[in-house]
Length: 257
Image 1 (cartoon, rainbow, N blue to C red):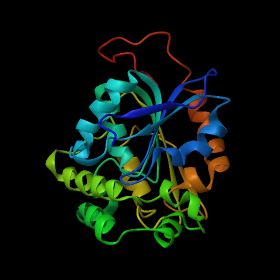
Image 2: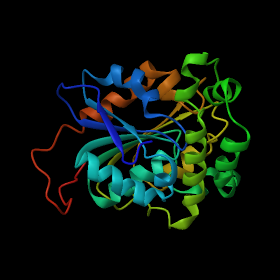
Image 3: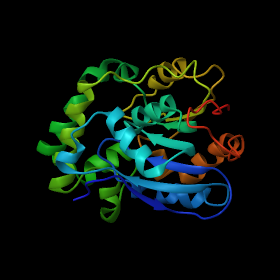
Image 4: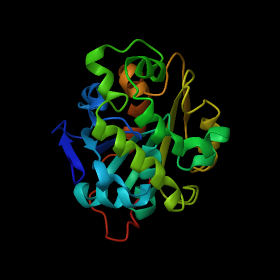
């Protein structure tokens, strides 16, 4: 059982130090294909969240745990619920750029699905998602060996998802990022059945003006997993603008995009 955030460095090259944040019940290892695609222009870091009772905290508390382990960062790529964690990191001033992939920073961005977000916990425990659920989320067939990278498959992962889903209501969501000096970009799959495509416009309205928005055709909820080449191509201009800063003060005042 993981009691702390676990980080795995996937590249030692040049470019922005890039944290890859999974969604509510997904594994950080699902980002490995995208990390491989970006290793030439960034220094990807995979993230695995704490498990069990140690997951019984809201997104802000989880962001604080991530910040303690990772320190200051150049950029974050966040999937789904990971967008809430990433937004808190941006507000804390420890990250200069955030890419949202099928993501959101507050439940209302999901429209009618927002109030039902906490139900993802009981669904994970009682529904025991497997290959069919993983394929539906991905909008393509997922082989048995990769199911665990998309949906929670072990008893511990399911109970962890339950704790984390229920904790969403225990704290206010992060504030909008419109007035924060953080460079953002958004990628949304047009076949996403969990975070609907309409989320893209709601999310973008809460981000700095001019934030690029990309609708990836044929992609479901985990485009980083199913379409790593396309995601890497769309992310490269954003990463190029986030060359590592020479220094960052403790106040985060130099988080200029």
